[in-house]
Length: 182
Image (tube, rainbow, N blue to C red; front, side, top):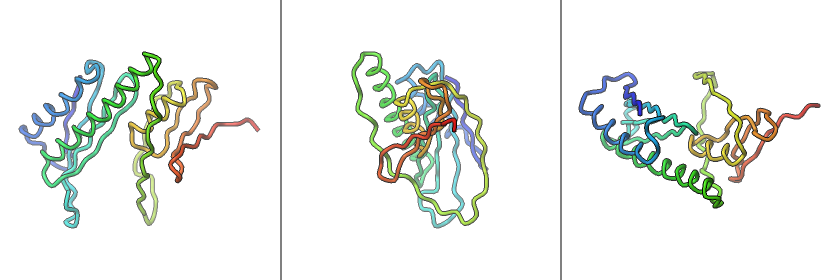
């Protein structure tokens, strides 16, 4: 596994780097860690009203889905502990889904997560992402969306080879937007 530990607007000390590599490296043993790239980003929120201002964010690129976890605490070591625990739960969930798929057992649909609502006075594009589209089933798209922790997911439907959008509805169910030649 290739791991990058970096700090956003802060220097990452060697003890913190080693601690993050050890904790996140342990989690990678759940899956085949040889084919993964992991990015650990550590930063401190400067707002004094935020009590848990030490933040650890981890993104893992596997052969299958991208898995992301983010946690905050009052201490950077505690934030790393929390994010590694969250990542382990997500890895075990994904690993269980893969085992169920290969054994023919049907796994239960993932439980919806309440969407985060943030109010931004003037929305602006602050980040652009480039994603690789590979055909996948609707179940794989739901799993990927849940592992990323997003409210929507754009994917290529394996059945139609058309770009589709999966989203979480306010009632907790899912919606699917499929293109239609009109």
